[in-house]
Amino acid sequence: MTRKPQRATLADVAREAGVSMMTVSRVIHGTGRISDDTRQHVRQIIEKLEYRPNRAARTLVTKRTNMIAFVVPDITNPYFTEILQGVEEFFWREGYNVMLANSNENPEREKALLDQLESTMVDGVIICASRLSDDELIPLIEKHAAIVTVNRNLPHHLGSVVTTLHPRGYRAVLAAKYLHETGRRRIGYVNLVRSISSVNLEMFMHELEDLNIAVNPSWYATCKPTWQAGYDTGKVLLAEHPELDAVIAGNDLVALGVMRAAVEQGLRIPQDLAIVGGDDILMASQVTPPLTTFRSDKYSIGTMAAELLLRRVEGDLTYCEHHYDDVLIIREST
Image 1 (cartoon, rainbow, N blue to C red):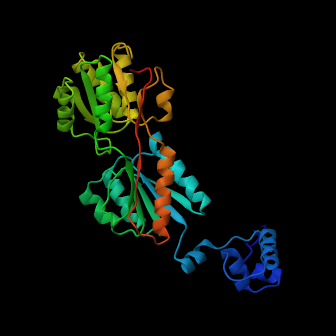
Image 2: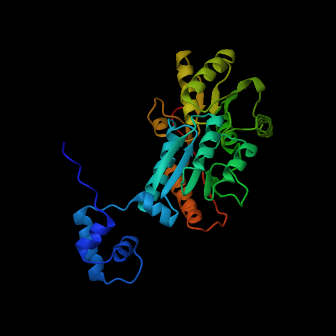
Image 3: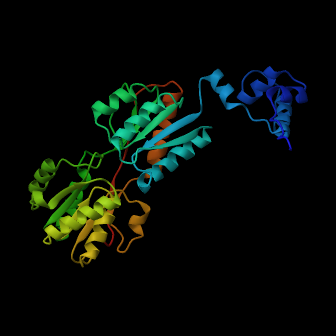
């Protein structure tokens, strides 16, 4: 049986380079006063022997794992994967790895994940669009030294925040105003459960009444922020209210589900029914007809969150809040 070659150790590098182990350690960590020639020589030996520092040993010394956790409610939603791309690429450049934790739209699972992460020795946590109430989330966050949330406000002493520039309900009201201006008079709304896009329907109706837009509580429904939930809810809403000539959805997945339900019921988009989504995921521009929606720079949201978290990991606990804009993108679905 062939034995696997042993990994080179710090002592092997020091012996081959003819220097002390302390010198090798200083070269690896970029510390201490070492001549350029010695530094270059040691690096050549490290490359020759294919030496890799022992992560566990380094963690014991530095108290860092160079591991970041990214908690999302639904990894199948492209909105979150685009944010994750920004987070991952930022931390890759900084020498960190990112661990993904997916709660699968289950608040109990999210609580369990945050509780488990406390003992996983990650250096920091980004929580994206938490589905927990403040009473549920805050005690769990208090256990972590470095926290940043996306689309969720926090008490300033607990962590930093990346969130929309606009108040809750802004997108729904702006979409309704646009639809009304284009001739739509019976506008439905599919609200989201436990989401930053969730709208207080009573306030929403007051806003529409102030704009002289017709309201009817039976035109509004609530569902999970998934395609299947949008499809199921859309089937019922459109069957019970054939008078609707427009529907606004809290996000694109729900809007696309409603669109499928409308087509199955023989409705033409947008001639019979206009549809507006919420976050401009890639498939929003690829469906037929392309979906009118709201765009935010999701990659930049990720890099902003990563930058704020790195500051906290490195000891700067000053509260910071970054904002992003939501812009209405008009396409053929309206």
